[in-house]
Amino acid sequence: ASINIALIIGSLRKESINRKFAEYMVSQMPESVTIKEVYIADLPLYNQDYDDTTIDSYERVRQQLKGADAVLIVTPEHNRTMPAALKNVVDIGSRPYKESVWTHKKVAVVTASPGSFGGINSGLDMRKSMQMLSAQMMIDPEIHLSRAIDSLNDDGSVSPRTQKFLQRFVTDFVDFAGNTSA
Ligand code: FNR
Image 1 (tube, rainbow, N blue to C red):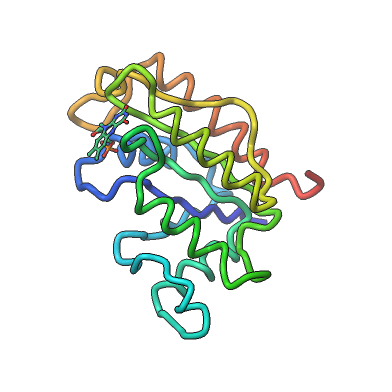
Image 2: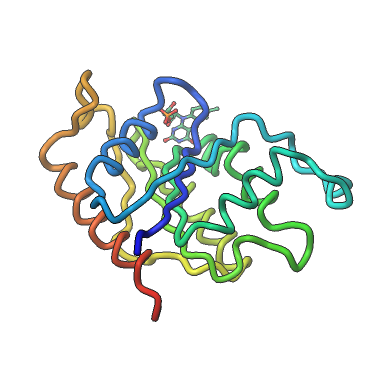
């Protein structure tokens, strides 16, 4: 049976390096995997008042996340924390109370930054939120790509060293996503 992956990119900008790394990872996934991006750019800021109404974009992302075997998040950090647009979809998915899409959801996070810390704060923040939400975070390998611009070529290809990291991650992530006994 095919494995359904929901992909969230934490950066909204067109030339996002995180999007480029995500595209590389997607290109390395086996054919048994179906990947759908969960678009987050059009989501209104989460407001608890909306819990009693229907917001189409909220329903869309909640259904997409609910239907996925696992969620792959590829994201930068903004001001030492996860980008607001990414936190927004975490919050939207977590409500209404008791209808959270994150409960027992398999989730993995990869971060990238041109800086030296590789966006690790985004990864650590996501782990905090996902633990609170009883999601099942993939623990290993942790991938935080520092100086990430240096390993990206203009044509979207990735340096051999980073390819090696990402390929190992993709193999482990697909195992994790497809493992029904986990
Ligand atoms: C950044 N950037 C950044 N980088 C980092 O390593 N730590 C940080 O705290 C921040 N803070 C930050 C705040 C804001 C508002 C912006 C716009 C940027 C730089 C960031 O890593 C860089 O722009 C990356 O290229 C963003 O990832 P994408 O958009 O290329 O995927």
